[in-house]
Amino acid sequence: MRILLVEDDPSLASGIRLALKPEHYTVDILDDGQTALATLRGDEPFDAVILDLGLPRLDGIAVLERLRRAGNRVPVLVLTARDGIDDRIQGLDSGADDYLTKPFEVAELKARLRALLRRSQGHASSVIRFRDIELDPGTRRVSFRGEPVTLSRREFTLLQEFLSHPGRVFTRDTLTRLVYGWDEDVESNAIEVHVHHLRRKLAPEMIRTLRGIGYVMDKPPRDGGE
Image (cartoon, rainbow, N blue to C red):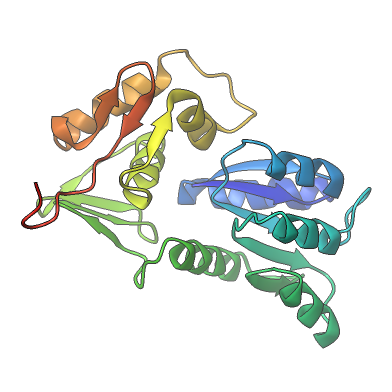
């Protein structure tokens, strides 16, 4: 899962990224509201946003309001020192999906982020089940046909993206940004290698290559369908 963290305190931003890394999140950081809004209006793929409110150049509330007016429904978790009830109401009414005040416990941030992503994907449980695969984001365990499967951090992230969006076609560039973000040097064939490993550990037919386009994990056919 790729997260955009908009936070102008560099030490806090680095700490959050470090805390979320073991959870298989790819975290990209921006430190001002104007750049965040421009980025979210572009074609960068993010599964969720963690947004401070007291940002330079453009306040977080303004970012939220403009984002929602433009029809962008990316899940947003506000993370701010503004802890008054009026501040909470304004944040939620402006389009935030959840609101967490500083200081906070890292465990609570992780739990709220999991719940936010679960709701956005229409899952009642955090465990994702698709065909013979079961993936638990909380414990970071994967099983196939009841047997545990060991995946690298990148493989887990890639599989979670496919399972969360069955039927969605991902270009290689989109997958690269989802798995690696902005700050890492990536080999040109990195995604192909990860897909190859997933096919070998799960089943070759699970992930289909669309030549010249990208990859898709097909939805199972409906009973009685053609």
